[in-house]
Image (tube, rainbow, N blue to C red):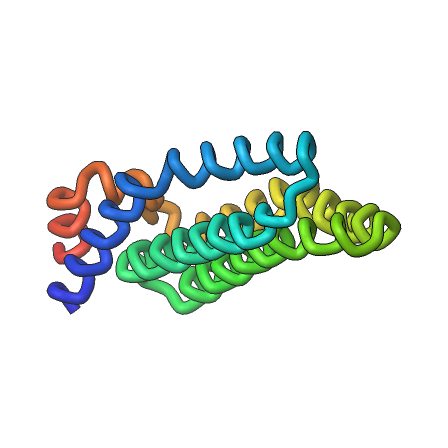
Length: 156
């Protein structure tokens, strides 16, 4: 498990270094260009961006689950992973009806907006469940910043 964790942590760090800001930049530029020119090439770009979001959520789950000491915490981490995948899929699905049907785009946009508006509530509830079972659980960013210290803490 130690080697597997090290590999997961290294992949997560590589992903953050190589794709973190560029994915956000590509998304924003593509959105502006799409609204300006109505180009259909934005759909594959959004597919790549949503796949990056889903992969980042998966790497977060893989890294943080090694520190979970209770089964309920692992379950909440899985819920967060599914939520991340739903957000990524809905981001991609939002751009397809834009070129097919405006009514479908408005409906899909409403569903995506509603899902994102309730995201903070879901995160708050998940944080409460994690704190109930394991309040000292490190966050993903803490683990990436203090890789050596956090892994030693987990082994003690």
